[in-house]
Amino acid sequence: MRKIKNPYAASGRLDYQCFGCSPNNPIGLHLEFWEKGEEVIAKWMPRKSLQGFRDVLHGGIQATLLDEIAGWVVQTQCKTAGVTTSMEVSYLRPVLVSDGEITLRGKVMETGSRMAIIGAELLGHDGKVCASAVIKYFLFSEDKATKEYFYPGADAF
Image (cartoon, rainbow, N blue to C red; front, side, top):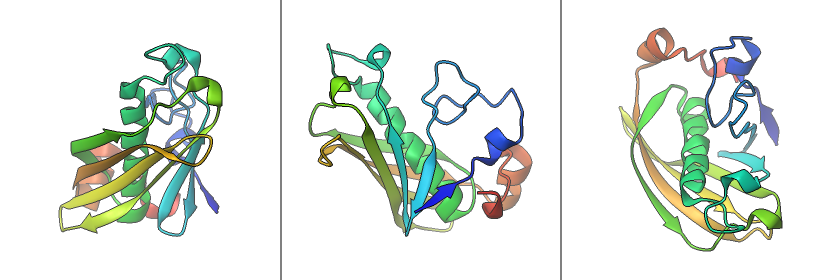
């Protein structure tokens, strides 16, 4: 596995406050990513402050985690930036905060000239799939991604 460099964090810009991946956001998820073949992977430790029902990770946080891993798939595998246009999440098993570390993984399922379909999974501490998602992204041209969305180019990762 290869650790993916976060070029936004490396820039030192304090206005980089992404809820999913910025180390500057005090209430954020602080995700870090690795590349394994065609997959992007992240490990994350759930916090009690993010539960819905007692000891169950809130479904909205689970959706956020799945969307974030998909965004990093777009940047590293599709080599551009984009925006989520739709996301269908299936919640299969509860994610217990007390069980500890979870794993996220995502990969490109299909691409077109201006869209990508990303498959993402959230795995519990035991490796079983707890939630999965099919996420559609509108892809920006690399020029637009660079000029308007601060995309640093594929080599920056």
